[in-house]
Length: 235
Length: 280
Ligand SMILES: Nc1ncnc2c1ncn2[C@@H]1O[C@H](COP(=O)(O)OP(=O)(O)OP(=O)(O)O)[C@@H](O)[C@H]1O
Ligand SMILES: [Mg+2]
Image: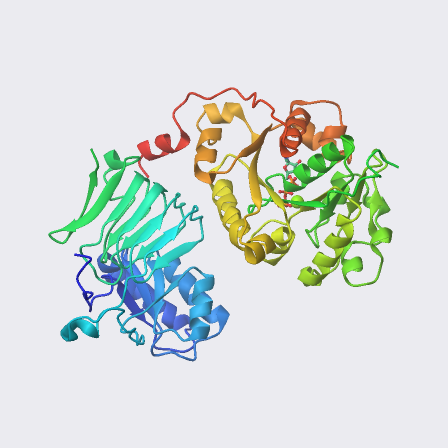
């Protein structure tokens, strides 16, 4: 699967995007947010959520933006990233641990090192796998935007690891792991010991509450089968 | 003045940090500094907690503060004028902080200059960090060679210590300039075996499994700590107690000596397995 010279495009996690349409969110904004969460609780609670800033390039006040983020989080939504953020917004969002999610990014295409069949040439980019040889601590986040992520160490509660490909954790996973983050439904998560807060593959996820408690503490792999996130022990 | 005067001082900077507040950083900084000084090492302990000024009270020298760390950084006093010599140990000095100045008075360049000057005179420079992970705490750890992460055996303290360990691995001069990590060890304080047995506190093993750094020592919850701090006495200079022995052992380990962890091993199920066994 990983040898295919293209990536599945389109869906970017099955995350919920909340698009902000007012540059200075005020009480009426928060009231509307409350209302929305009440009426769409099933959809929103527990789902990975993105903040879309496309409509508000001028929302660059630290207080305003941080308040929005904190407010959304305080409602129990799992806000993990921003999209269409300008550099200032990106920096502010990162302060609260949000990642910049790149949808339809205009990356300059690299020349393939070897001549590839012309039909495929424009899509070839070598993967950039990442290996991290330390623990990922609470509050830290590691992202492999174009490839697999291998952690030789543990991932703490409150830490996040994200990869467009597979995630391998040679240690305990206590935090969150999101594989196939750009839509690759064949991506898998492997870990030596499962204590995760959240496992997600291509947008489908399970949280500590929905992970079978028998699997706790086991070495497992997680993968998608028939649109369901499955977790299995190694035997 | 001391038996070490012929040698160049070691100049090692050790930060006492935690993330969470009130876990025993200042108590530990005072105890560790005093225990090092008792062994003949020239030691200074610096208060980085601008605006609170607890260290000089625990060290019993609050009435002798004239100039402070901030005055030195701002060029209003010389280091020599601000350093307070301990009356009990001539190898021990205190660099107090200001209670009135703003936290922003601490600058990275200023801190570096003072630390460099201290390194020429002292073997150990113990930095008592403020709580949190903001600027003050980051400045206290930035120039450290080693770190003692003070942790209480409870979930929020362990979580904060984990965050601090992440900062130590990335936001220090060592990490930024040399790509090396500050050596970090965990000092578990306020450990109460009865509460561990009752399942109200995490076991030592649980804490170490999460933090994954060496254990420097385990200091029991002890009324002797409060008693000593009320009379301005670092616990290791007070009458021997379980807590003072624990700090002495921790300092021996800090110096690389092998000292047995004489804590009774717990055989109960871990805090987490119990936690997860119960409905959320
Ligand atoms: N081993 C112990 N047994 C009993 N009490 C202790 C122990 N260690 C610390 N304490 C008490 O806990 C309180 C907080 O300690 P301390 O001031 O050293 O913490 P701190 O981490 O420096 O706090 P801050 O974050 O406010 O700077 C004090 O009242 C102290 O006496
Ligand atoms: Mg303190």
